[in-house]
Image (cartoon, rainbow, N blue to C red; front, side):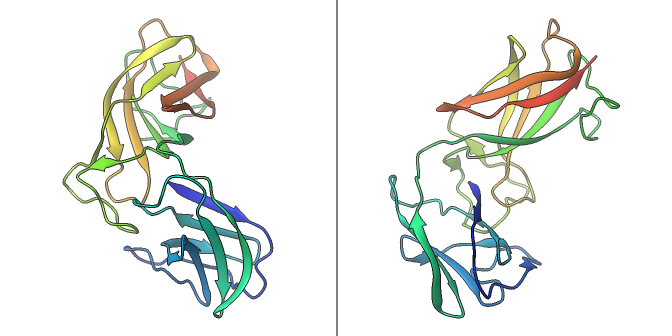
Length: 198
């Protein structure tokens, strides 16, 4: 999963990762989960985005933020097998779904999320999958309004770190409108993402 940690991280300069694999330190900032440094996407004095390692112990490992080798924050992170979180949807033409660019019934949408759990083949922490598809152990359930969508693909998004891509067919009898609720169930039910369908 990708995680955003918010708080006060004194001395952490605003910087983002410039390449893949992701670094374990951005400027003077690092995050340790269970004592091991994790890949970082972004760091600032108020927010740090990082990737949860593939092999943490399920439970509540200790999280520490260090700046210049000094601990500036500490807490625990709850780790479970799946925790789907949706953040974007693209239409079949690859453009972002919106009220001015709705999808049509019967078309395939690409849902972008995180929290998919284990994939096969595994991808190293901080790395992006290449041409070989890395798929989830099971297909999630995708609900579009009150209808179940057919899932054609579920796995890591090629070229992106920690991003889950789900390709699903919008049901022929799905509701239409500019804010049709879409959710994913993979162990748990995700947040709701509103999509436009005509």
